[in-house]
Length: 208
Image (cartoon, rainbow, N blue to C red):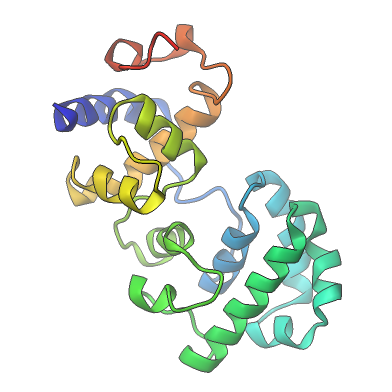
């Protein structure tokens, strides 16, 4: 039942949203890693505004490590939660230098060894840079997975596994993109736009 519903949702929504690996601007795997850390509880637009000057100032993990954390906090302040994010970036950069010679590893296990990097961040980098299939569970995917009856869990790792079990691997990345776009534009947290929802009839939560 869930597999059939997930397949129909994919088929209906896929043509409606332009494909892009990520809206975050980057030139290297390292830049995307930092940008994704900054994107927590922040819009991609705001992150791109910050990284436009941030990546001119800091060009490598070593550059971030050399900067006083207070200076980095000022640089990333517009993204919100800047103290936590500064610590995460510093920790991540230290891990990159200590474990991988400053290079971003192309697999989940190694990425998760980096401080400040969880499965969501790792899946973004792996999918966009290394073409590794994965489900990115952000706040929109989390909300829509529940509303659409695709997962009963509130745990991002469990949601990721639930969604992976509903679609073939080659659709994982695109499916999470679709849910993110649909969550931003139609199935919003407070006022879902039922009249504009292409999968309204398939939604178990359509009466909310």
